[in-house]
Image 1 (cartoon, helix red, strand yellow):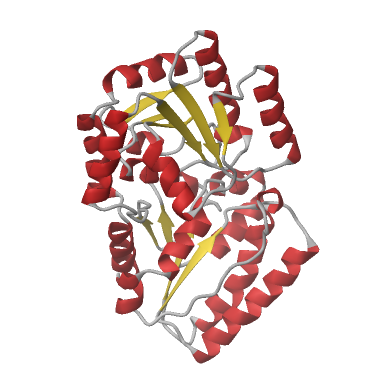
Image 2 (cartoon, rainbow, N blue to C red; image 1 turned 45 degrees about the vertical axis):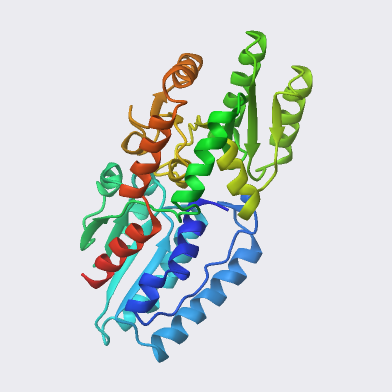
Length: 356
């Protein structure tokens, strides 16, 4: 469960896309868990070869008018994508179609700066291609690339899991509850900030602040992360203040969002761009405390929360407690989501790009 795969699922199941376009989908299957992402394995080689022949088959027999591909900026996945691009570029000599490569993370600039070969291969890969970026903040990624056709910008969007009645019920529950449930929901790697969230929980305990509970949800990246989390909770006696819910989906995930009052996202992940979890939090009317990474500052402003850092995290948390835990603030967060970040807006904007 990571951003690119979730966006891919939303496109696969999009009524807007599938009603307006005749589509064929191929799943890019390589990493089976978080630990495998970015690492070489023979299993990945096998899946890459299967992917190559599936693409080749559809180029021969489906003959698309456009190709949309979720690509990777570097690592083994880049060379896999480069291999896949060979038949795509070759068949374009006979069948006219537009190619769209959607980037969900940074890395192009770093990769093309490593060597002249990386730069040349990336220019070959992007030759005549439309690049789709999540945010204008990513445009500098192509400073070393001149071969692309055009850049499109496409904000992420997420499904709305509640209606007006459901949201009013959430507001009622929040007003009746004295407990401030703080939610961290992301992959459980330190770069995403679960360790920083734990330190905030410890500070809250040391200050003897009452009626606050920290909830963590997400998949573990490694056993070392699991051990760090459990040892920190045990050593600092945070068992009654911290609860880990595991990898959550469906109703369990919705209940966590609905019962929370604050969403905490202290990520320092260098590939962070436009986190879907922030959009999900806004959809439930949750004020956000987030670190200023990627395009987070384009999502989080003073109307929906606070940008912070490790040194000012407690100050930001206290400010949220004082000024944002009320119906007006909750509704503002929800309205921001409805105005900018619904799945329908994302799918409509993608459809317009593909038709362009």
